[in-house]
Length: 181
Image (cartoon, rainbow, N blue to C red; front, side):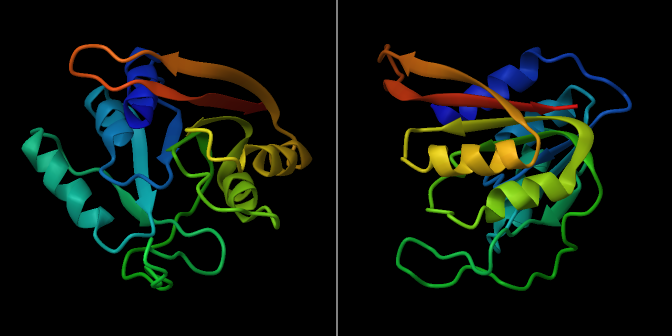
């Protein structure tokens, strides 16, 4: 599935002591957990009001030390599937600083003609940065790509066509790797 793809890639990536990693739209924070277990300097972020609690619970279940969490909201408001606002002001500190690697899974779920997600990424990406986005072909990739190019990123796109196997559903999507610097 799409979350596991980023986590698997994170598990294979060499860890650098000076590198900062940000997971955006972390949900249950699988990628952050994998990076943290490997010794990476990772920060998890999301706008959902329960994400921080899920992160803390998952780190405890896995016998890990706490992972830094920051509120990460791009755009003016996030909405649940039923149309209700999720969270526009958070008790957690907002994402701050610059990161060398930014990762996200299934975060291109809304139409974003203004480029708020690309702007959020640009605001938190170091001058020399890499961005990994897994997109399950929701149809919002082209506009996002246009805004990332305007922010100085180049794209490498890989198709993810994984057939169904025993105990695993089929998956079709894209691994978008943006680099700058």
